[in-house]
Image (cartoon, rainbow, N blue to C red; front, side, top):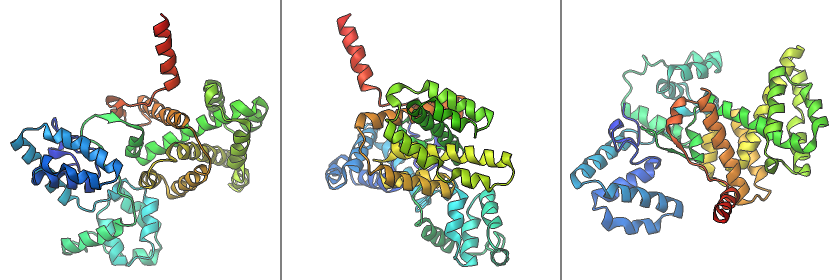
Length: 377
């Protein structure tokens, strides 16, 4: 199977259209079937972000020889038609799909499930009521169903979700927004690491006494990780006292009560620290994506279990009520990128990303200071 947005699936032009979404890819290809450079004025009619993205890709396409360019464009059009309407459901956490199929007719559910990976299909089926499962047709039952019907049902179902991004065919630049490429389990690992860092930024401000009170509720490894995070937090990343106190109150509120319902003390302890790190991580992630497009936020949410994805969206709405400096926001995004790179080095995120070039905003203050020192030297 050829990967969407990857002409031919490899070669020097493997990432030519990446990371354009399908609609912009098709628009660009259509422009070049009609002459290309002569139709660039169309970009003036698009939103700024779309126009900028297409301008950059159009210039790259124009650099390719005519016959080779035509072959690449035709191949990509065929590729996009083949994947038309594909929201890449296999990239969405099964809990979202489960919620979406509830209330659908068994035939519709069967058609949707037949087009999903076996592991995802099994997870969804196991959570449906037995009377519903008994009426859902199997893949064998659907073998004579017309492909057009299968496609229409899937496309209608996909309208409930944001289209998930497709990974590039070859290593390329890795920007902050490329964290949406991470698999669900990888994003969960990232969120946990961000949660520890966010707690470290809070406890650096509120002090050791408050930290000691929390450490007693954590396991040894988790406690050590948190202490290390506090020690490694850069003072400029520490929260101010009011924000730190409000954040900790928000994170701890209700968690201990929920943990106590878990049964034995060990289960309660594990539940408490797991949920604490996840909630804190989702809060930090929300701060970094607060000014991004809603589609991007939804893509991240769909990678996560639905309960955590919905919590991420609610945090985004909450943090948008406060102001933040551009420089601070960029630094937060850089810290997320840095953590992805470190997790990849540890195998917690696919090591293939180590072949990518991580693109950081950079520290403007640090760069200015280095420039001044160089001039003085």
